[in-house]
Length: 203
Figure 1 (cartoon, rainbow, N blue to C red):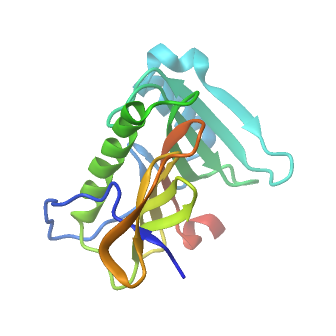
Figure 2: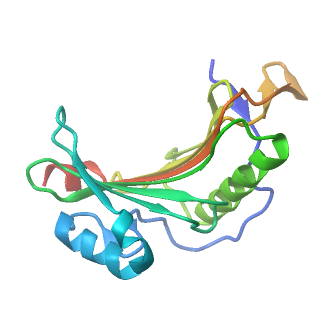
């Protein structure tokens, strides 16, 4: 049975009258070539251009551009941006943003990651979503939580997940009496992921 948690869930959010569309991240949209995305990154983050890394997954053939930044709102502290390109066509199909608190942070040090995730979740929930295309608060393992997952009408997806955080898990048959589970030892992380729909990936 799927375990659920209200940890990090927003209590209120703005309501929009239009549906969410997953076109990419920022000015980088699905289908852009690797060289175009690299130029865009250099224009948006000139101070960090020398930190841009390019590599190829030898098994899948996917190419990646990865950039480390000292900070990136709304997450706290350093962040990593990872752009993934489909093999052969070298077209953008995924973008992942990571905020990681290294070492073994205290509860107070982990909390800003949860708060940032809540803000991101509230922003996404303000849009209209079609039918049963969203999932919220799914516990994936010790300290691991899928805060929000949504799929647009073209199959594009966006996800917000947390790792290494304390959880209040709703127990079956005991509404209003959540089980508190402390954060596991080790780092904590917030991930925001954007994935292109099947049509983009196969075109």
